Length: 116
Length: 115
Image 1 (tube, each protein chain N blue to C red):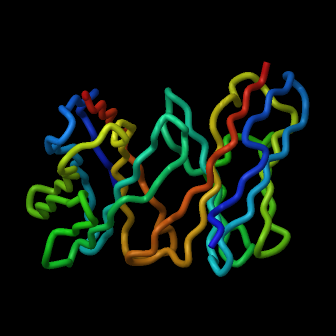
Image 2: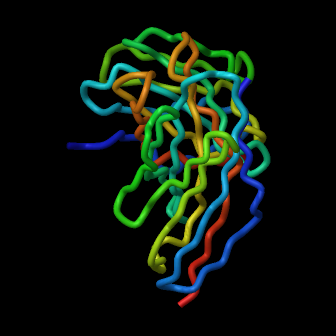
Image 3: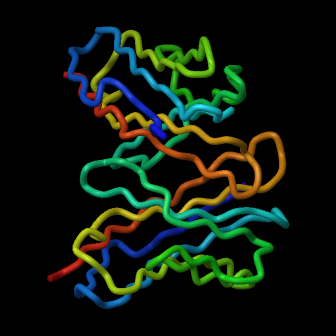
């Protein structure tokens, strides 16, 4: 079974600074994908970034990057130059690559507040 | 391109009433998912379809919940009869595939309140 752990109860960051949101996972599958989603107060779930377990380089998408450490089973999201609009819940999720039931497993989420 | 469309955005109903939530996936996506989000349980997958066929409904909480996908551009999630514990945000998501980097794109959600 797959499991995603997001233990940070809430994070605060000053505007324009960088912040790291932690995510650890547990799986016995050899290949899998990791995803981060953002959920602002308006409620929608917005896809941010994807990392494949066999990707050689850490994924980057604009101000978002993923610090992927496969041996430690961690996939932390780094947001650079934080903006007030980054205040939201952030969810880490994973999915095995193969198999009939390749469902996304979500973590509990982390609340990020950006201070002006 | 339009994203996933859900209606209604908000629904308030009384216990015992039937509730129908609607979803239009992104055109060309073969997979459609229904999720429920609550503070206590987080985001839970209820059911998903592939090419309009239900593949896994193990997350459907009980017989009061049913989901259909009569065609590639429309799905419904029905609760009959509704109960206060069904109050949650219900998301529909769609994806072009299940493997690899295929991403699920979520709709805006339906906030359901059962009084």
